[in-house]
Image (cartoon, rainbow, N blue to C red; front, side):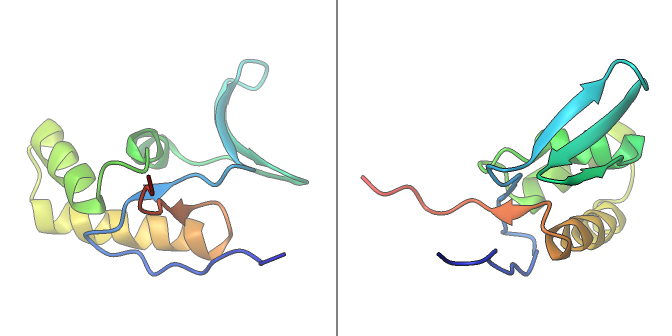
Length: 103
């Protein structure tokens, strides 16, 4: 069985949570959490907004475009921050990259 695949997050990457991880709102604590086997991570509000856009179809560039338009912020600054945040999550095993669909 292969271990987690290390990914290098870049603008064309299409990030997605791995099958074993779920982004959920914890009603009791009133916080968003990423649930994974024997691990829980409580991302901040900005990270949650980015993670909600990580569906395996949108690229990091697409996500950055959407956030730059929403917040009227410089795209390059958003792109740099999004890549850094997603790379950190990927390094911790909370994020992977969508694979090409095969038919």
